[in-house]
Structure formats: C-alpha cells, structure tokens
Amino acid sequence: MRRFYCLTVQPTLFGGASLIRDWGRIGTRGQTMMETFDWPADATNALVRIERSKKRRGYRETVESVE
Image (cartoon, helix red, strand yellow):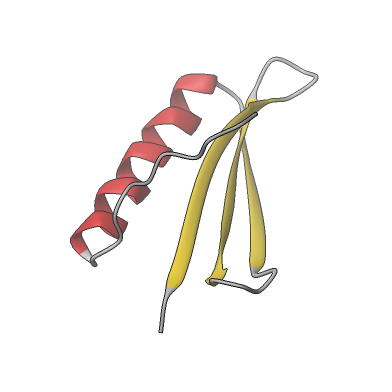
C-alpha cells in the first residue's frame, strides 16, 4: 500500500508558526493535522523531528514540481 506524508510550516497572523501535516494513501484526500507554535523555530524543530521519524519508517523525500 503506497502512502504519502507531507510536512509544511506556515506563518500565523500573530508571529508564530503552524506545522501542517497531511498524510494518507496515495490517490485519496488523506487527513490533516495543524499544530500551532508560539515561535517559528519551535515549528521547524518539530518538523525536523517528525521528518527524521518518518524517514526511519521508510518514507522517502520527493520533489514536487510547481508550474
């Protein structure tokens, strides 16, 4: 079963940052979770931690082409 996992850091209106996580089976909408942090550095640290964990479980990084 092929799956995807997407991590994104987005700024908030109040100077913080949100870590947005999307995951599911390829070809479906999947699920989304948003976690808000007071400091952008905290969101980036969480992204790196989760990314490391997912790579250990076999997820691979892909480059998305945007036109």
